Image (cartoon, rainbow, N blue to C red; front, side, top):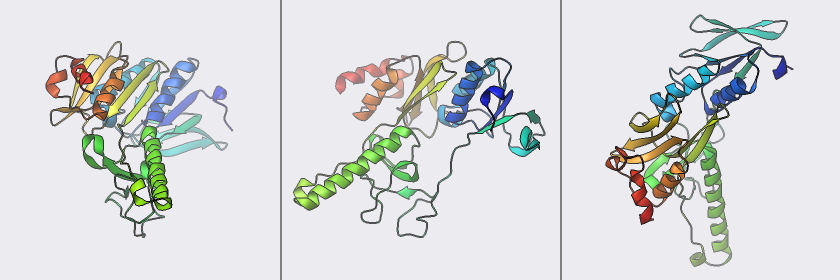
Length: 291
């Protein structure tokens, strides 16, 4: 067993939420004698979620606190001494000294259980469900990261958002579906008023124990973004993610409760247009009066 207090060189593998949150805690919560290295396959951390500009700014924040990033690199070898890791070798040829490795590389779908079952799957291995989280097999429901579901708030199908809030929300919906089915069977069909899955995806992440980014909505194109504020110094900003000239997601730091207000607008299906917020970061607020 290795004690954190006894380590001097720590390597984090991955650039996931957990990886960078750990990086922030380790660089701001420990003494200056420790070195923190982040090894990642991507070129810019978190770019696939927030876009390149915010990803670069996040990396700079961690680097200013002492972390070192090794981008577009894989670990190809662990080098040990007396059964303790002492260094790692990267695909780039670099050698990093370490006495503790933290792996935070995400997860893969475990779908062996239902691969050959009657349950309909998507081409990429998720379970396809309807608006009540029901699968193609009667009385079988699927929730959480394993499922793809309609996101009615944006009229989208086959969406998979791997946020804890979405896992909880799909669980609530499944319970509601089961409850209404049970009540309908016990009393009469007219009593079984099935409800549809309806929510706005939200999440947040705290970096360096000081900076929190709050996010609401959904986009698969984080580069189509309008950013107001200061990424380089204060890291105080609001980012509007655009799809077909409409705002479909928002990320913000130090502008509370902006993301909550926009999530409310999304929930009531009010469309914020690009032109509303392009030159006025608070241009969305006129829609609050309509809900």
